[in-house]
Amino acid sequence: MGKFLKNFGMGLVYVFLLPVLLLVLALAGIYLLGNWFYQAGVFLVRFFRGYPGFEELEEDKRVREILEARREANRPKKAEEGSQEKPAPAPQPQNVYVQQNFYQMPPGYMPPPGFTPIGQPQINPQNPIPIPEIPQVPTQDQTAPLPAEGQRGASPEEPVAPIEESKEGIPGSGEIGVDEDE
Image 1 (cartoon, rainbow, N blue to C red):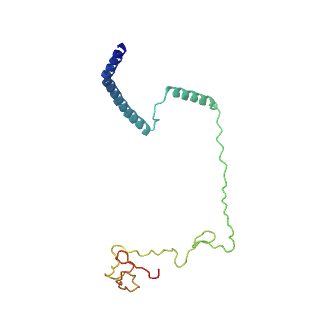
Image 2: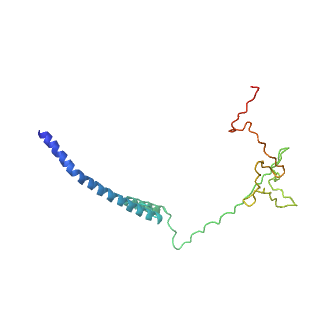
């Protein structure tokens, strides 16, 4: 019976402390979410100002100081103040050669239209700038006349003939065209 009372008592403690625990967890979550937004804002401001996103650690500062001291020790010493330094030698002139290769074309080779075998465009002396013809496309202002009822539309060169009123073989006409030979 003592074990039952002990477990029952602990259950009551958990029931009464559960709302307090949930309240503490909710407050911690709100604090951490606010801290996250604050740190994100600080990071973005530092980033767009050109600084690293995070602040430099103390260990990194010490390593940087050690490396700078080593670089300073490895630099050549400046000459004494009384002596003059030698000027840097003038750069040597550089010759640039452009090689142009002209290849002989095989017999029967036809160059692409408008180009000579060496790749230069051919120019017509009568028309120095070739202008391609643009086909006329009717717009809404230039509408073609609609065919009259009972006539087929045709091009302007063909005469328009009336449509014959025949229902043979027309889908949905109610009649089915059957071949007698089959």
